[in-house]
Image (cartoon, rainbow, N blue to C red):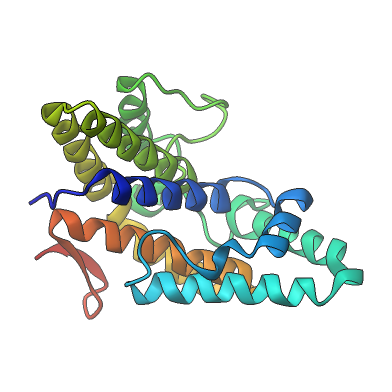
Length: 235
């Protein structure tokens, strides 16, 4: 099942996946955070606001921005605290509090650089992509994978723009298989760890937003989150 999306909806989804990728993969930068505080981009998401987790995530991140705007004198320390939290959650000295690698959750003994990592790397390679720190960090980082989904969404939109329905369909199929095989199976476990260990509304909100975005987008492929079983299932 593949619900067709038009170019406007695809552009909105692509922007959200790009934002989600940056929230997880990029260490908080003072200039970027200052821009977020000034412009308050988390007041509304261009895609997914009909999902409760997306709304919760956006509200939490926006609340952090409002508080930071009211504390101009303490802004530098707030950013420094965000940086420390990002390192603790997603990078860690040793095992992070909320590891963001597929292989950590799905391979025996949480082995990194596993066969799953190589499968993800091959997916990137098929589209002419390669991570910057190849061999130095696992390719199956959630931030990188969300960026890849955004890339595939962009390819679908480009194909639609030139009337190439076959290429658009192939890009959509690739999105579905990548989400179902590599992202959704462990996303709830990751979100649980973020909820348990995040100390700020900013990253607690990021966890909710990422989870909700993926869950909402998966619905176009007939995949929904079963909250009782805490798993994604075909409808």
